[in-house]
Image (cartoon, rainbow, N blue to C red):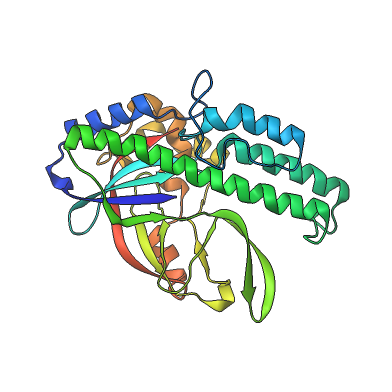
Length: 306
C-alpha cells in the first residue's frame, strides 16, 4: 500500500470535481479483472526477465507481468482521494503483485503440499525448494512495489493535469502487507511471514486503511518486540464477502457512502466492501496502541475500486 500528500486544499474540490477526477482515473487505470491489452507495459529494470525458479513460472511472468503492471485488481484493492486533518489532499493506493503473485503462490503451495512438513505443510528454507520459494516471493514483492509505482505514475498524471499539483516527495509512504522477511527477534534469526500485517521499525511510517467509507491512518511504528515489530494492515472484516452480500442492501451502501464519490453503477458489486463489513478502525487502533501511534487521519473523498 502507498500514500502521497499534496499541499492542496481538499475542501476546494466540489463533488463534481471529484466525479471528474474519478472518471479520468478510471479511464487510465484498469480495475477488477481488467488488464492491459496486447503486450502490456514495459517492465522496470530487473523485472523484465527475472530468474524465477522454474520455466513454468518464467513463462507465467512473461505472460502476466507486462499486462498486470499498473492495474488495480479487485476485492479490497482501491485507489482513493482523501483529506487529512490539516485539509491537504492525499492519494492512497492499495494493490499488490496481482496475477504474478498468484502464480508464484500457487506453485510453491503445490510444492509444499507434495514435499513440505507440518500442518499446514511448510518448506524448510535450508532446502532447494524452500530457497526457491523465498527467492520467487521476493521477486513477487518487487513486482508489487513496481505495480504501485506505476499506478501512482498514472494517478499523479491525472491530478497534475486536472489540478496542476505535484506530491510532496517527503510524504510518500509504501509498505508491504503480505511478505516473508528474514529478521532477528529475541536473539534468534527467524523468517517472519506477515499476512495482512505490516512490519515497522521504531519511528517508521506505515498505513492502516479502514474501509471505502471510513478513515484510514498514517501511523508510526513502536517496534513492539512481542509483535515482532508488526501491526495490522487494516481494520479486518467482521462479515465474509458472502455474508455481506446476503445482509447489506445496496441502498444501505449508498447511504453509508453519501459523502464519498464512487461509481454508482457498481453499487451491487461493492456491497461486500461496505463499511459495515469491516471492524471499526478506531477500536482496532486502540487495541494496538502498543504497536503503533496514529499520526495522520485520512478521510475518504472519492474511491475507485475493482
